[in-house]
Image 1 (cartoon, rainbow, N blue to C red):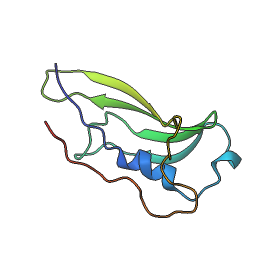
Image 2: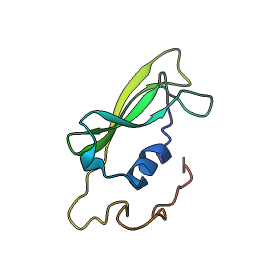
Image 3: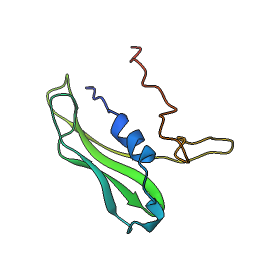
Image 4: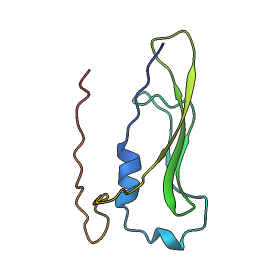
Length: 102
């Protein structure tokens, strides 16, 4: 079956950036993440401002399997009652990285 890990920190940190995203052109790259030994990226991944949202498209190379890749798209959506990621007026990160439990 295979497995892959996603490092969510760059995606969450992009939300914390002190930028006025509304002034950015649609499709503007906010941050780029290169493949390396500490991630499962098959190629460079960009975090972009697209249609009023921050998104990240990535292709992950599967591990523990003969071959395989998985295409993933992350998009943050605030739900009802959600406090979001605390961008407004705060430079502190309101989320805490957690350990993998499996």
